[in-house]
Image (cartoon, rainbow over all chains, first blue to last red; front, side, top):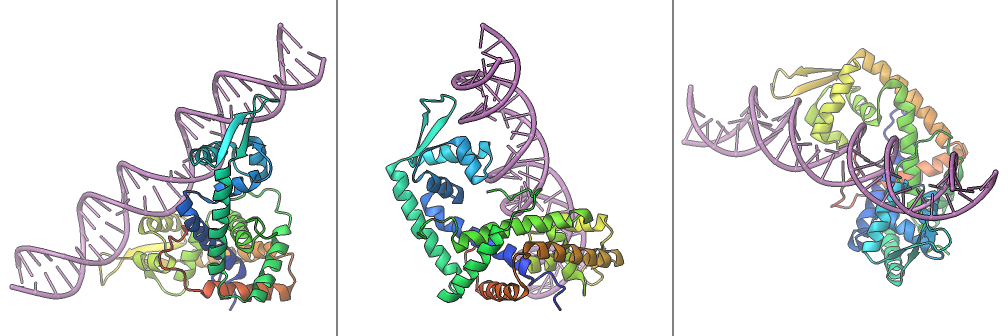
Length: 149
Length: 149
DNA sequence: ACGGACTATCAGCAGTACTGACGATCAGTC
DNA sequence: GACTGATCGTCAGTACTGCTGATAGTCCGT
């Protein structure tokens, strides 16, 4: 009965993750951003960071990060300046415009999430959240080629 | 508190889906297959299909399907023959070797899934499964550019 | 002052999924 | 039977993605 991969928990996770991801990307489209941009902005919300720090915290590749910062800069959400203390580094800081964009993205994403979770009651959502947290906390196995961010 | 995207249910779903997908792909590597090959084999388990039927049922692109069938044929898991009733079609049918490969893949995938769900008790897994099913049953919104298979 | 390490950047590569075009075949119409 | 339009599988070329490797600039310890 349960030997078909289709319909198994793991498969459902993959499928739902994929469609959820697509949903979020679509939700952000009006801002001209993708998920990674938001994630970077979120990190920058409080303190500026160097690009390599951003890479570490997001798991993104350094070359990808260059492009993401480029785009955020072009949107006026972020400023890139040479560090005064270490002139190798670029200090990336969020602009005011970046802050409002981050706020807008939060609205859009929350809305998309609500659509996604629509079939569940509030209590069920909490239960789901708790279960996912448990899974997420699991130490990922060592040689895992993580999916691109 | 909950306004950070990080740690929200939707985000967790995306992240877990991604790492679960990677896990499954890795699990199938010893067979020289990816998830899509297994999915095709699974459909062929009972009855042969034409390639376009396989496309319909999997959502894969027709050109991608050509490659997948090519690879499955090269592995000896599948046979491609001109249909006698409609000579435009290729009837794709699973070989015996394909059957055993499908069995092996089921073992590997189940194992990977067990690792993935390790942090949860059996009861919790059932609850998670039930919740995911509810979400999965949700009619996907109309203009959804579904993620590649 | 010098060798080694780190930072950001760029060009080029590999993988993926798709678009468009094509030959072969079918079904329906005249 | 010939013609038209549609379908099936295939392939070449395109667009996009994320990464590898190389490079210039900069720092730090000796």
